[in-house]
Length: 495
Image (cartoon, rainbow, N blue to C red; front, top):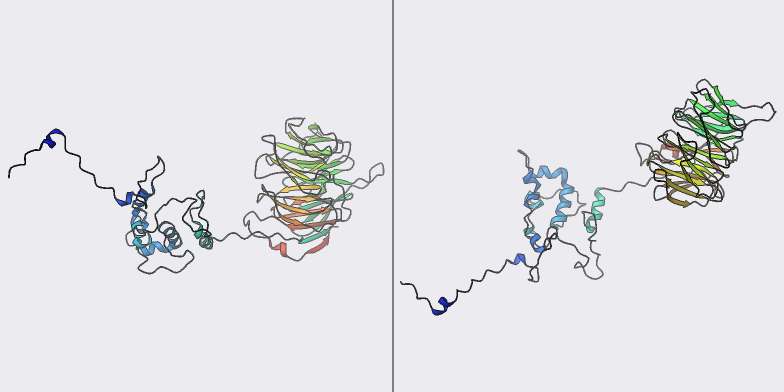
């Protein structure tokens, strides 16, 4: 059959282009409107067409001789959670029973989105989700949780929260300490790394073994040439616990060998009482009422190597940093100074306190973090960073701050107080929320020491008692409480 002759219209203009078929309905939104994509945000319709069969772990990680049911068994909770999140299945997270045989197959556990048309995989969430007025609030688009809000309750059943640590509100042991002085500027209690407590009572120093509860009288200062009885003003253990330094009211610093129960050194240099001392690895620093600080090396024949001058009143607080590079000093002139090993003048000065600074503590968890507390007219705990020479925070405690000590096991700090509440407070750092407030002393809690394991503190007051409290967790089981904290409270006498 011959071809048809072309018409005039077909010769004068080309034939109209054939119409292309309409795009598939899957490329349109539910309202049949074309959806375009931004450069980084894919369209919802395109996401609905993706084939996520690669997520089928049983097929991708199949091993010879193993079945899908065997692989699902160790991760049943994970599979149920993943299935519910991606495919919108109705299986409850908290159901411990195994799925049926028909539901155990890999195709049913992670099936294609086409089998669940009511829910799109990786769907976009917005604040104007299609929920009725008064219904549950939609998930936040800024949420970082991979689990939707409706499954948080079920997920919490799989991983319960750690129980809150409880701190006993009463001491588990009390020691009577007759003649324990009620003097804010003295430091008469210290706990050694060998688990021995040293206490200055009047003119004597007593040692109490925490292992055997045995009490030993170390020394009695007796009477001086002028027939004036000398008294103990400070005690401080060396880092290894072999030597005990004793500061006296006459301005002397004595060194005692504990193993031999013998005085091995007498060092002079101060013209007034030695109310505070601190050890580094090799140096002993002593602060006095004569407003000076002496750096002593017990290995050298001289009484002291350096004299640090800067305070205008009695030095009542001294602490070396954990790395032994800096020493902080607090005085009755309301000043807090930072010194290093090679300078005779302070390298940093903090004058924010409005009263004497006795309470000083370096953080063992953050380099350069220092806490200090002021007396009755100040009542504040202040934090500063010596590495950046900056003040960080200030907390008004409502009472005179007598002592501060960081926990070496957790990021917490304990403070003891005087006027007017005579309390002991355990704080969580950096939020400075109160974990516990302990009461029991009837006068100012002037003395504080921490046990070698970091769990127990001992506090002393002018009421002539020493009280032992379990406030910090141990180095391994941070959520547990020591058994002794709930034991029967014992009361004995230290001499």
